[in-house]
Image (cartoon, rainbow, N blue to C red; front, side, top):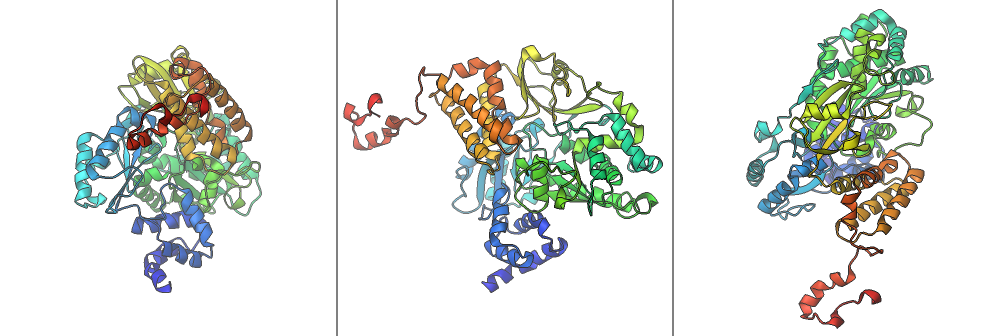
Amino acid sequence: MTSQINKHSEYLDSILHFRRHNANDLLQILREAQEHYGYIHSDAIDYLSEKLNLPRSKIEGVAGFYSFLYLQPQGEYRVLFSNNITDRMLGNMDLLASLCDQLWVEPGKLSEDGLLWVNTTSCTGLCDQGPAMLVNNIAINRLTHDRINTICELIREHVPVSAWPLEFFAIEDNIRRKDIMLGSDFKSGSALAALKQRGAEGVLNEVKISKLRGRGGAGFSTGSKWELCRAAPGEQHYVVCNADEGEPGTFKDRVLLNSYSDMVFEGMTICARVVGARKGFLYLRGEYRYLLDHLQAVLQRRRQQNLLGNSILGEAGFDFDIEIHLGAGAYICGEESALIESLEGKRGTPRNRPPFPVTNGYLNQPTVVNNVETFAATSLIGMNGGAWYAGIGTETSSGTKIFSVSGDCERPGLYEYPFGVTVAQVLADCGAHHTQAVQVSGASGICIAAHEFSRRIGFEDIPTAGAFMVFDQSRDMFEVARNFVHFFAHESCGFCTPCRVGTSLLSNMMDKLAHGFGSPYDFAEIEKLNVLLQSTSHCGLGHSACNPVLDTIAKFRPAYEKRLAHKDYVPAFDLDGALFQARQMTGRDDRGAHLERGNE
């Protein structure tokens, strides 16, 4: 066994040295180890267990939690098609079937020659330029049958992914409408220079005056969060940027990190000065692996410009640096306490609250967690002042909001508006026609029907984390809701029984309706399940799981009623139908070879 472990020591030792043998970096260590072999070798786990002084079960438990970590060989090419509803609308399942047919592989199974593994994954953050896939965790967009044919040929010839055509990996920003953020002429260091003049207390006051609310969806006051963290006792304070935007239909953070990362990092640095933090983290979702090198280069440039590191801009005691942690395919890590657990090298299970991260966050120390757009907004506030920002938008919802627009429209992409814009205005600008519904804020958000398009985006009416998914009259809203329900079942962390079992039961109920076994009884069961999930789930995922079903039942009931093939309850499993193959094999089809409905 020792000789086997020693085979893996060389590449693991370099990873461990870089990570300072810090067990809190376990997720990053496992991710980097996997990039060497394509999976996490069993002997590598033994070696890490010894060097990190962690039980093997702990390491396997963490690795088993994340969708993009593998404990068994998954082939030289690991191909994951995005299973988001917008990708499905663009025909991604036909493309998946074509690839599987050409390469003689079944979805979810390793090919017989061990070369290829094909499956689906949740939203990849490329809804504006789908269908999309990940190949060895690197994003490829705008899939077509021609592109699939080329990919099949590359795989047959064992061409490394790094040598594939560059145009496969060309991800566009698709910015369609700019306002104060996307249209800003922001220059590195400008907000920090203003901070130096105003001081930490002065900047905090400006953020409070701005009435900035968190852009992740909950809308908590940013100034209040920073003030609470600043006042909380602790040996260290931390700043965390939540870039784990896994909500289906959301991709604004992708663009902000690609083209506005200085604004984001500067906002984090301002926050650090206000709350007294010396260390910050950017938690980058695993689907954005392709952005990692770019972001590391930006951080290094900022260090050289004295915008990160020790004595920032020559101010003694202003010491702050940022480290990037890459996720590994877990939607639940978008919840701030689950994200912190993941930062600490654990499974991403949401914590009980209180206490809240502002007092007991990373390593149980006071921690500010804000999302990408929020930190970018604080840079603008740092430069222009709180009153300027508060004068934009509405009384309750100050500033602007960036929408990730996708689905049935001529111009999908990013749109920035002052808060208070109507749904109808966004639809007109993006070129949407014959729209029957808009899903705002992703699967956990709200479904808006045509008669509601005059409603306004803002915390006083329709709050949103940014997703704006458009569905025209050709779309089956039942299938939209069904896709979202399967997403929740797939992404449940499994910690609490109500959510783990409840989301699975809900997806089974939707499948039952889809397969022609529905009855009014099933509607009643969904209502009961919603009450159970709302009252007993550990976190917001379970609380939100029934939202898309209840919304679409209320607003698009005919889509459900046409699937109610029975007045009374019928089971989803057809036992007589299951005997069909046996009847074929025996050549019998008489009455005795069938089950009478009343005798089942």
